[in-house]
Length: 333
Image 1 (cartoon, helix red, strand yellow):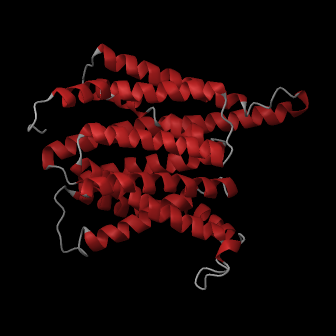
Image 2 (cartoon, rainbow, N blue to C red; image 1 turned 60 degrees about the vertical axis):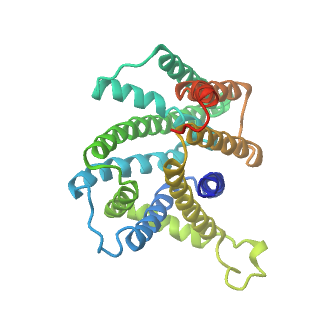
Image 3 (tube, one colour; image 1 turned 120 degrees about the vertical axis):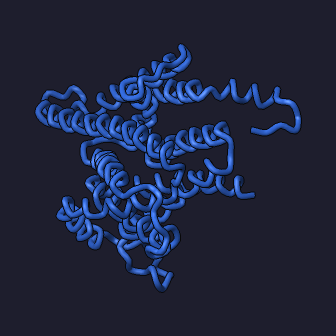
């Protein structure tokens, strides 16, 4: 039942989190800093209570190692959320981040001197091509549409969009480097994911002082947003600005998403985790396109197919499924 509940809450938490995130960035595209700050504060408080037990439980991995992770983790999260301020749509954001395998492979080759099979390289090529196709398809929707009267505006929009792409690319490779560093830490000190989750979020909090002005500005904008009419009959929620409700929803679902993924990795095989997370990304993408009416052309569909097909090929889903079906009864991994 624990594995089944983990699968359920991965879908519920992660997919619902995307909905709240899109509701926020649709109204306030520059909400990245306040969203990230709220998520970090909530996870830090939860970790302080249940993981660190108010400081009674001593950390196993040294703080100095966590500080390195903190700097990288903070930069990755802020960069990803900040990209929404540069005309990056939610579908492109999700597809682009699905190309993390590319960055991880490149960083592993450079840093760890690893080599891969032809299948791995082929899958990375598919993911790369899919990402490029979606990237250029999205570029066409912000290049001004060929209207000469809007030429300067089109150039400005395209330049802004390129800055968003640069932010996503930087975050992608920084995240890959962080993963390699974390892998080395776990091999040295053992796997302590819950502890790492808490300390990374806690030690990142001072970094939000650098974005304090943006956070306060958007907090003021959130307070000026209209309340949700559907909640007028609810005593405790009536009159609360809708953006604050969306932010709380995003914050809570982000925690459900992270904790459920952690639980899933500890309860299920890698095949199950791969299938669940890949399907979750795809369902989030489809929902974003249909419900929020984001532009999605045939080029986007081709790119999406290549990205997710490449992901399945990279993780060798077919080979693992074949092995599991041919494995003698009574034997488990």
